Length: 367
Image 1: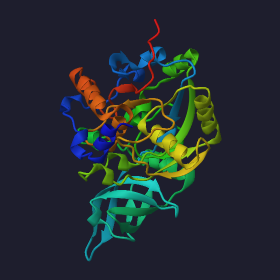
Image 2 (image 1 turned 180 degrees about the vertical axis):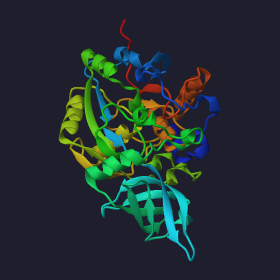
Image 3 (image 1 turned 120 degrees about the vertical axis):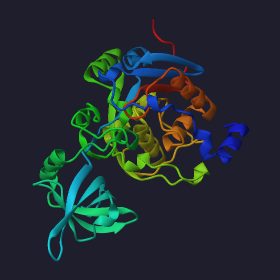
Image 4 (image 1 turned 180 degrees about the horizontal axis):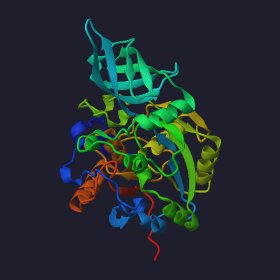
C-alpha cells in the first residue's frame, strides 16, 4: 500500500462514497430471463459493456465462483393485535419484518408501529399463524410463534411476503412474482431476509454454459440480514458498526477455495455476501471450514486474502457495499465505473444489472 493510499484511508468521510443516481435507474423488476441483464466488466483500467450471458466468455476455465445458497424467507407479515376493552374488542393492524431466529427460539423483528403492541400480547397473521411478543429491546421485538419446524415454514410461506428492499417497497408492494424473482435458483438454506442479489442473474442455462466452459462452483451460506440496508449515520466511515450475520463455509467449500488458490486460480465470489464470508473465514481459520457470526467491515485499505474479483450489482450511494467495492477496485476507479454505469443507463440495486470487477488480473476476452 502506498503512502498516498494510507493517507486517503485515514481521512475517509461518508461523502467520499457518494454519487448522483437518477431515480429512473432504480429497477423495480428484474430482467427476464435472468441472464439477459446487462453486465459491466471493469478489467484493469478498461470498461466493457456486455450482458450476463457473456460471463461464459470472460471467465476462464478453472475460475471458482463462490455462491451463497441462503434462502430468503417471506419475512414480511401483516397481523392484527386484539384487545378487550370495557365495551368491545378493538384491533390494530401491525406490520412485522422478521430479522433472525435467536438462540432461545424466538424471532427478532422490526415492528410498525412499535408502540401499538406490548409484551405478552399476540398478533394473528392467519388462521394458522400467530405469535406472542415476548419482549421489546433497542427498537426491536422478540416473538414466540405458535408453530415450529416445517409447520412454521408452510404457514409463513402462505402468510408472508418477500421483504423487498426499502427503495423497491416504497414504489410498489411485494407480490407473488417476487417469491420467485427474489430467490436464487440454488437457494436451499432458509434464513435470509434479503437476497444475495448478484446471484439473481444466474439461471440454469447460464450455469450449464459456465460448467461446459470449465468454470467451477462451490456453495457457502450467509443469511443476509435486514441490516444490509441500514444507512451509515457517521461521517467518519471507520467508526461505523456493522451488523452481524450468520455464515458457514463447510469442508467442501473450504477445500475447493484452498485448492484453487494453491494452483494459482482465481476465486471470484458472486455477491458481496459471499465475499464478506470467505474473507472472514480467511482471517478466522485460514482456508479451513468456519462457522459463526461475521461483522467484517470492508472499506479502502482492506487487505483481501481470498477474493480475486467480484460479481456484484450496483450499490447505494454512501453504503457499506459502496465502500466494499471501493476497497476492491480503488475509490477513484469505482467512481469512474459508476459514472459510466449512470451514463450508459445501467439499472441499479437489487433487481438491477450486474458488474464483473477484476482489480488486478489482465485477461483477454477469447475470440
